[in-house]
Image (cartoon, rainbow, N blue to C red; front, side, top):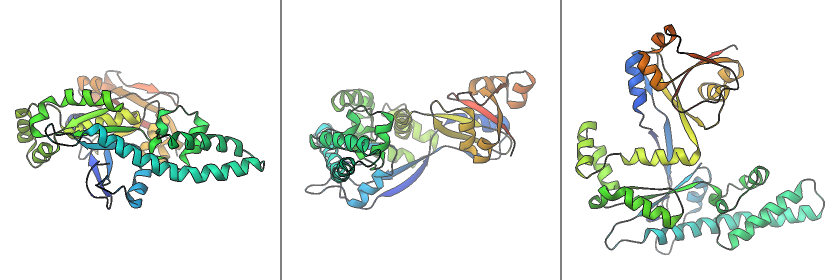
Length: 321
């Protein structure tokens, strides 16, 4: 959600998430295909002088899993990113208030009429309306699981997890970590800082040349990698992998997911017919020299339905349809 520019049509891009483990395993197993996790970014133009987010932009944001506020943070003469974030947050808060106020009124009428289960809905929406009326984002409050389910019917924007992305000048690229830490303390949101113009220039180059260009400005980790990493932490996701001659692939799943749930990310049939999973950690697989070598050395673990998947697990699912 950029905090500057004219409000307009949302644009969508699916971006492969950088993961060197896919490259390593694909080479190790001589895979014919490599598939990376895809992060879907919806770019909605933000606030302009005298204007706000369009109805179409708000609708696109309501479908997102998390929000990233892109804030100009040039050191000389630019807008204050903290003020820009506050203005944008207010815009989202007002949008939520317009959506939830009507729902709160209807729920209160149903509760007074004795409609079953209406009391909880009325209480939750009344509390949400009061918070929003005070300018408080809904994520600032604690909500029980049942309460959150009521709120999600309205797809509130201020309940979504959010992070800030500072857009720095090239000259400030080497100080990105310090600038991000300083802004995070003021914003109260997870924050990363990138020099977007520099990153765009690097994206036009071959990987080695891009790394050299960024290194020349003191940048050790690319902006996309930082933003995706922050989003992964924000959404509490982890990555597991599958590998073989046909394909090496990375998959995302929520932290705490069981082996059958991870199997379901691959294909619904695998979850329905799940029998067991053969599992090995990425580092152990590479050290063993590949899947067949790991099997011959007895390094593959057989895990049942209750197994909780870990970051970097490499899985082979046994199933029966």
